[in-house]
Length: 187
Image (cartoon, rainbow, N blue to C red; front, top):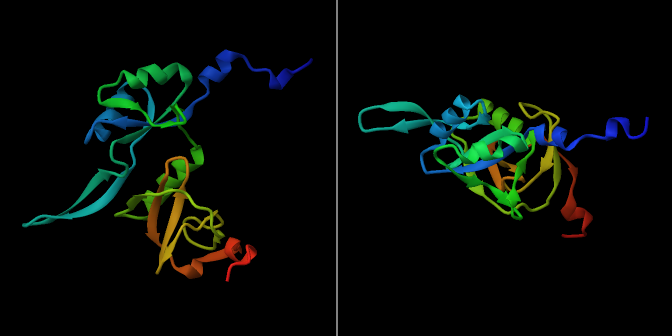
């Protein structure tokens, strides 16, 4: 039989689910996630555990990690339904098309938030630097690119979103696999 496993119909591709980020109205992230759930749309609204200080007390609150973003895992057939949800403004786009977020990046966000609280985000342009492997801890054996090292702060890149998550990881827990600056002949 010619083509067998390689021949998939258009309908098959329309039902494949991928992660997308959608823009929401300000302060609507949790509400949009709830509305997606009611519509049976798989979603993820990463919540950051933060200790807030008021004049009379301290309280742990859960705030959206990405302001004005919610992630939806949908097929092409569900794209319109997402846009028709109250609070959704549009898809986050890359080169004029909705940007697909890798499953591995969603999993990395989930793991990161399980391990750390009071996570900060910084908008960055992705630069290639040393390739490293983490030797112990939650991300043991994971490889990545070093964006910047400030004391004990290590930045973990999420390239399709253009963000980094910051956490303090001892330098002794990271080993350099490929040092780009030395291989270029820099001093």
